[in-house]
Image (cartoon, rainbow, N blue to C red; front, side):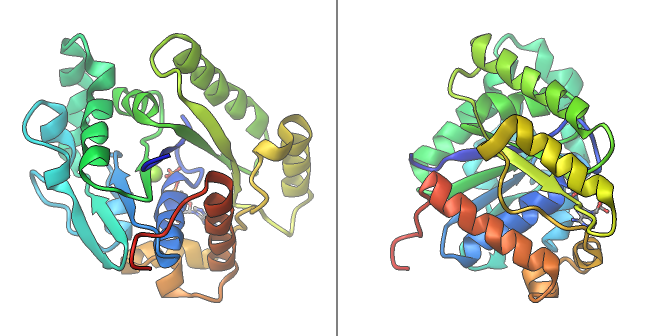
Length: 264
Ligand SMILES: Nc1ncnc2c1ncn2[C@@H]1O[C@H](COP(=O)(O)OP(=O)(O)O)[C@@H](O)[C@H]1O
Ligand SMILES: [Mg+2]
């Protein structure tokens, strides 16, 4: 597939979506895959996590409202093969402004399809905001694959049920019949507690191979890295977090047949 689009989503906040979007993107880029990370959360944590400036007029807001293209918002991240579309507060306004138009669920899809046609990215990663916002619905309408970030915590299965039924509605309700579940990514696994182990086994017993074999550990380095505007590979390459995201990148490359850019 040309430029597969992965939406990293969960209606809950604080489950590791952004940490995963940033470090998976960096891991893919480090393997020579031209990767575009689109920050769709008005909080712009992925933008600042990459050490990029938040600036007026640089987010997907304008293009979503019909002004200009998404392609012209693409910036280099300062890392080889890693490109970004930044976010800033203005994205909040899409919640009220977009639904005025009839085709509002498909705005992002149209814009991303144009990017795919113009550039041959090896992967496009969407960092989604929490909750079922207009932006996250647009992301699911535009994506080929949903990556569910799921924190290893009590009642994780309930949250999982919610997001999977949303995926089903989107797929079967005609919004995006292509949307597949790429996999379930277990995050913040705590080796010191039984609970983490129990949650992973429970999710695996229901979803088997759909759960990525790379489980992301709870690792303080992953929390610290964004405040330096660094990915985990730049901040501490030998940390357990870096090893897990490198393994996840490898898993993506083989599972989805991602290809390095020409010249690699
Ligand atoms: N594996 C992890 N280990 C430790 N802290 C983490 C891990 N993943 C995320 N965090 C921290 O948890 C908080 C929420 O993570 P974040 O990725 O921003 O979640 P979301 O995007 O789902 O809201 C952040 O402070 C982040 O640094
Ligand atoms: Mg986030």
